[in-house]
Image 1: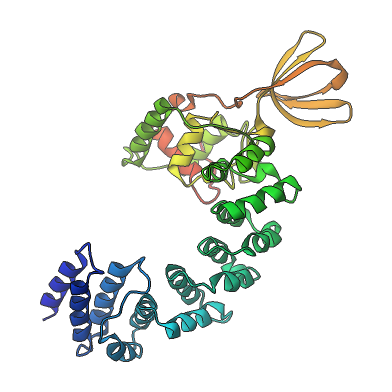
Image 2 (image 1 turned 60 degrees about the vertical axis):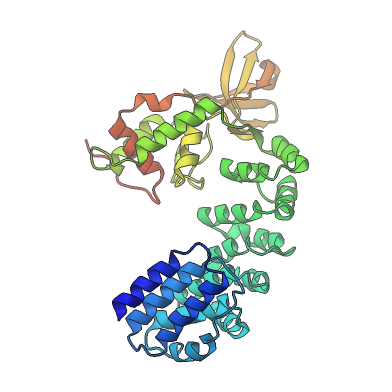
Length: 398
């Protein structure tokens, strides 16, 4: 019997129109079978299939027999069955299920895994009370990042201020989550831009992917402030996009040799560390990439292959001409009192402002194009794998 029910479920879930009346009737028939089945594993599999089929839908009209079957399944000795029943009840618009999940989420003594699952279910349901709950949960370190990400789901005027209050308490990954949420909505983005203008958040804290997200709103006031406070941003040319696709295909293919992260670190130190800092090591000519969106291969390849697409003001190339006929090309890392310090790939030089004839910011970065051409295929796999990693690895021992 299980075999035929499983086949029935597969056919049902294969329908692209599960919300149609006839499909809901079929769903009711399937749920009716659960009433007479005591195998918790089988119950779990059926409920999981139904849940997957209804994922993303809200306030679905429940089958007529759901209220009869759900109480029995809610008492199952199998924890997954109980959670799936609760989640499906939420999909069917149950207020009791909604309130129960809220209680699980806000319970500081509850298991973190259960709280995360409750949050995921409430997010899927677009719970209108979620913003207030999550704003309060920003005080809890153990679930703060999940709360920050969840706050992007339902718009609430208090959300950006609540996130900005805890911003300085966040680690690198948490700050990126916060900026991502603040960049998701125009109303949040405007609050973020005001915070940057006031110096509450440094403009160079914004990684390029967040700038792209902010500009995607297409709001002139936001874009003009970004140009002023952050720096130059443009679209990647078609030829570069094709190059990115080619390298992405290469890097997503199985490498000929096993990945060696330690060699990737050595390649990074040889090629990138002169300008970029990662895990606290490296130069300051380019942005610190520790907190950037490095795990995203598209983002990483765009920045490597088209380094001039996104240039923060703090890292724009400047051409200095001095009174003794010297031309210096680098990044201004300090300008105070009567002197300017410029960092070049070779050294940092401090020059009296009185000796500077001209200072011309450029719309390009110090990072050269074509860096990937210097690597063999296996080396590129190692370097990119290291760059996308979650932590430091030992140095390669020659």
